[in-house]
Length: 598
Image (cartoon, rainbow, N blue to C red; front, top):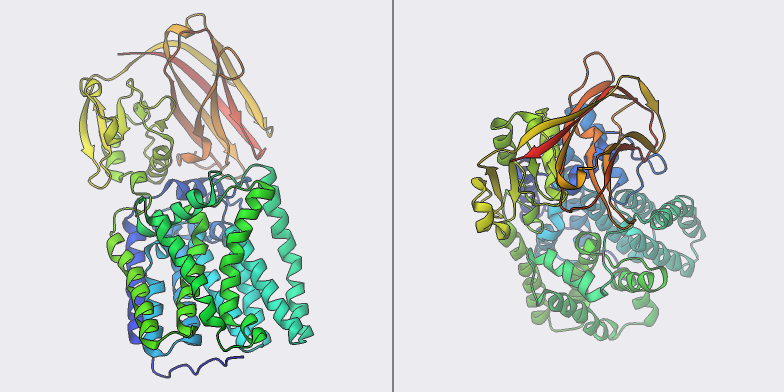
C-alpha cells in the first residue's frame, strides 16, 4: 500500500487565508440574503415547535434532523432571526475546510495541495449551502470527513480511521439522508479491506454500525411509503440529475452544462488505464483512488437502480450535491496518481482548480441565492405593506413560495399583517400583489401601480389604485371552549344560494392554546360539484407571534379571501387540519363573513 506522505510542517497560508475569507463571506451572506422558502418551512414545522425526532415530527424529508435540532437550540437561546437559523450550517464550514486540508495532505505536496484545496473551498454550488438553514452543508462537511477517513484507512489500516468514519457517517446521515448510499459503499469498501487484511476487530466495528444504520434505513423506507421522498423527477437521470446539478454548479440554466459534467465523469473513466499501469491488481483494488471511484460510480449506479426497482425519483440539484463533492476529489486524485506526463498532470490539475474557483467569482454576491434567485422576496416589500395598510386588513396576493418568506417576516416583526393569498394567483381583487415581471401587462396597469421592484430578480410589488371594499354578510360566534386532538376539527360549513355569484372573505378570530407552538393550520376547503374539484387555502396557526399575556396561547386574527372564479353552486367548509393530532384548545372563536366588491 502507498504510505501516507509526511505532512509539511509549515502551514499552508494560502489555503487557510482562503478558508477564512470564504467563511466570512458565508457569514455575510447568512446575514443579508433573504430566507428561502425551504428554510422557512423548516423553521415553522420543526425548529419552532421543537418536534424534529422521527415518529414525533411531521413526516417529510425536509426534516434534516441534525440541522433541525441544532437550529432549535440556537432559536431557544438567540431568537428566530434568519442569521441565527443559519448558524448550524455556518459552524460546519470550518469542519469542511479542516477535512479538505486533511484529505489533500494525504496525496498532494504543498503547492498542489493548496491548488486542490482552494478549488474545493470555492465551488459556489458546494459552499452556498453552508450559509442556509438546511442540512446539506452539514452533510457535505461530514461527507468530506468520510472521504478522508476512508482514504486514510486504505493506506494505513488503523482502527482510529474506522472510528472517525463511523462517527461522521452517522452525523452526515442525521443531516442529510442523501448520503445513505455513500455511507453504505464506504462501510462496504472498508469492510472488504478489513477482511482481506484479516483485521477481525475492524470488521466487527463496522458490523456494529448496523444497529443505527438499520434504523435510518427503516426511517427512509417509511418516508418513501408515506410519499415524503418527493423531491426529484422521473424524466431521466441525465435530465433530472445531471442537468439540474450542472445548472446548480454554473448558477444558471444552460444547454451545455450536462455535457460538461458528463465529460468530467467520462474523463475519470479514461484515466483508469493510466491508474492500472504497472500496478498489481490487489494493490490498485484496495487503493484510495478505487475507493473514490466506488463512492462516485456506486452512487450513480444506485440512483438509477433505485429509480428502476423502487420507483424513487431521480435526485435534483441540492439532493444530488454529494455527487459533485465525490466527482471533483476523484478527478483530482486520478490526475495526480495516473501515469501521464508530469506537465500534463500539473496543467490538468491547475485548469480544473481554476474552473472550480471561477464559479465563486461568477456567483459572488450578498443579495440572493445563485440558484434560487427568482425565489428572493425582499424585506422592503413587506415593510411597505406594513406601513401602508391596516395590518391584517390588507389583501395580498402572490404564489406559494412568496407566502413562506412573507409569513416569516410577519412572525419576526409581530406585525399582524395578513398572509399572502395564493389561491388563483394573481388575484385582481388584491390590495397588494407580488408579481413576476413577465406577468406585468396592460390590463393590470389599469388597476395597479408599481410601488417597489426588486433589482435582482425584477419582481414587482403592486398597490391597487382603488382598494377592495368588504360588505358584512354574516357573523358566526362559537363561545364554547373547544378542546380536541383529532386530525380534523370542523368549525363551520357555510352555504348560500348566492355563493356562485359573489366573492367572499372570511375573517377568523380565536384564542389558541397548546402545549407548544402547533404545526397545525386552519384550512379552508372549497368543495365544488364532483370529487375532482376541490380547492384549498391555508393559514398556519404557528405563523403568528401575537401571544396572550400570561398564557401559553396566542391570539389569532387573519382574513382568508375566496374569489369566485366559476359560476356554479358550492359550499365552504372551514376546519382545522391537525396532522400531528396535537392537543389544542380554542376559545372565543368567531368567523366574520364579508362580500368583496371594488
